[in-house]
Image 1: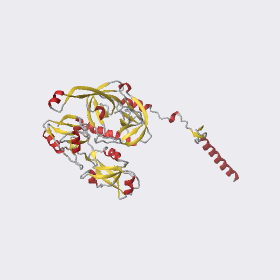
Image 2: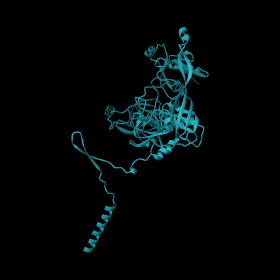
Image 3: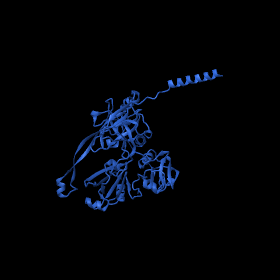
Image 4: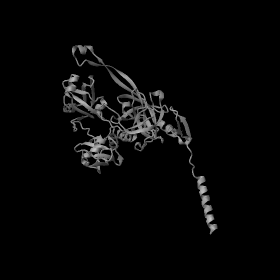
Length: 480
């Protein structure tokens, strides 16, 4: 019996020794002892990483750079000049047009289809009379604009070529804070083409101050990858070399990179690009609410368990939200299972749907979490349609009768204010939010309904005259 027990004990000790010998051994972290300014000794732990622990961007960089192009545009601008003859004798308003001047600009783009479709920023190609694209292999092509979407600052251009190196599209919703990303583009022009910089995802769902009055969908990816003018329209890629965003903007007081750059998430880009390639314009879904971010005061008043989500301030009658049974003060916390943190995240989620698509809205009412099935509707682009705030739709713009104080300040007797701009002919023609329309096809206007009525009577083209918010006269027109 004693022999058996000794055998078992010996076997157990042997097994323990084998496991102990083969198991990973904890590595003591090296330490460094330093003396601070007060003379105290402080011990710091240091980290010694092997080469395999560092991220390797070579595959992502060498693959994705082939899909990023340099975009050079030419814009024809009219220089205004005062005609002294007209000014002295009272003809016109004293302003004439000088000789057209060519201005050149540049940016970046990303090939998303082998047959020549390239995504870039709307602000890169807006108003361009010619566009030239240079690939990473120095091949050059003339490009044409397929469609633009000012609301997301996305545009699609096309070159006549096949077999181009299209980039793989990733999933921007799957990006995590602190994840490594690369920015690829042409900062500061042609001399720095195909520049690659690295950074991390600093934040998601960012919005930026915008006083233009134009409708914007903003849910930017913020990174600290170095981006400068010329990077606009370029690629933000993950470690796999997949496109996760289109670099769009920086926040800077100098005009150059100061540590903050922003990209449109690829999930928004994909949705917009599909519509632009298929229809030439975006078929935008709308929920039909006005909303606000939940803060501590609102959370306390509504007895919410957490300060998150957005509350519904108003439900538009007959909208998708109204038909789904949503009400004022309901707090939306998720759409199709995706967490909602602020108004930007609602815009980002809704913009990923088409009109007619269905989604599950998770919301809180009276302290209880509930769900509603919503069928998204199309945005109202019908000329003459009136929103709840009284604004009238007109070729993508929203119009209201100009405020008397504004008219007095500008020295006008009457006019119609452009209160906001979305995608449409008004924005494409060069309209600016805050401007006052005074004439439509040589007829004075003072109400939005008059603008719509006079435009409707036009047989071929619509010509608008007015004054911008700085008091400068403008003239532009577009075909019906």
